[in-house]
Length: 147
Image (cartoon, rainbow, N blue to C red; front, side, top):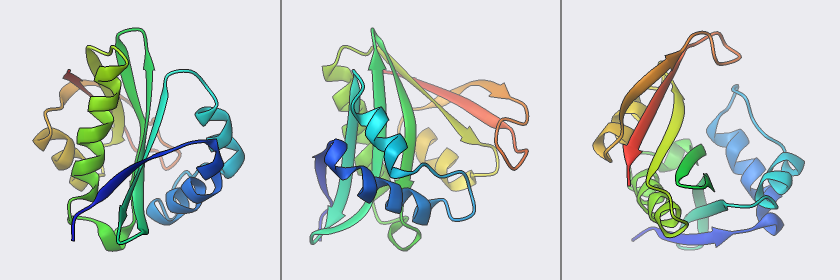
């Protein structure tokens, strides 16, 4: 069964918060109010992946001028390595392109080997490093891609 990618707005903030908490169990998670605030801002694209009507994950992109930032990509552990993350990245980058972005960047924990592999396989390259960026003390790898 294929993955459906659907637009999500502020009305989806509680669903996105629940998915985020499940995807980042034990990590830094955002609550519904945080998502509602983000989604009400300019240049935001929230895209939800679902299969058979069941939510699998989402991507949150923000485009300002000609640059986009992937704020978060969250995929449920049970749905990983089944195409949802790749589909979300692809459609998220296309949404940023439509908003006029020429490039995109993201930050990912150096310990998140699976995410780094996904990003590399979808055209992202290393652009920098932030020491002790995350709450757990792990460093962030900054990645970018040309759109």
